[in-house]
Amino acid sequence: MAMPTHIVAVGGIVEDEQGNILLVKTHHGGWVFPGGQVEVGENLMDALIREIKEESGIDVAVSKLIGVYSNTGIHKFYDGVTNVPTKLMLDYICKPVGGELAISDETSDSRWVAKEKVLNLVSAPAIRTRYKAYLEFNGEINYMDYVTHPTFEIKLNRTV
Image (cartoon, rainbow, N blue to C red; front, side, top):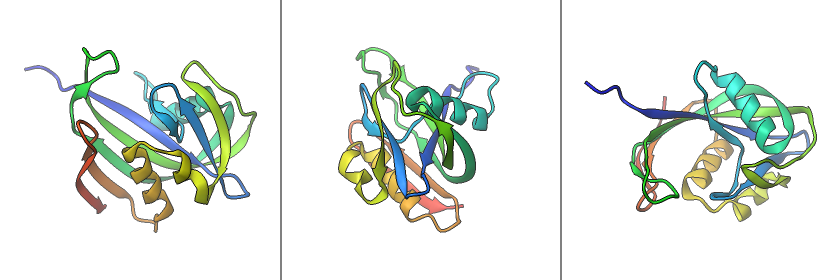
């Protein structure tokens, strides 16, 4: 029996004291809130802190889990050949504690954006949907199952 292969990823919605949200511009996905894959042997919190620092230059404290998301669709990577496995993503609210805005090999820009203007920049349907879940967060963890290819489709949306 083959072992299942899934990507585990974390996302951080970083809000500063003025109500601005940290966004990074990726080379392939446009504007997003920072995050990425959890590496082997790494815990979720350390992965999130590392990814946000790598992508934006900002140091954060992780404060609250707000959403669990499954992208259950299988599609081709940007190379058009490699299958991308299903993905489990966990979104957290974070607070900045230091650092300076920067870019990385994965990002071409990073900036603080007024909370109400974030959706003017974010175009990816999955990221927009997850950000809207943050805006509507009422203390209950959101769970969503969706596919992103060939088109974005929510298959399940509930709280847990």
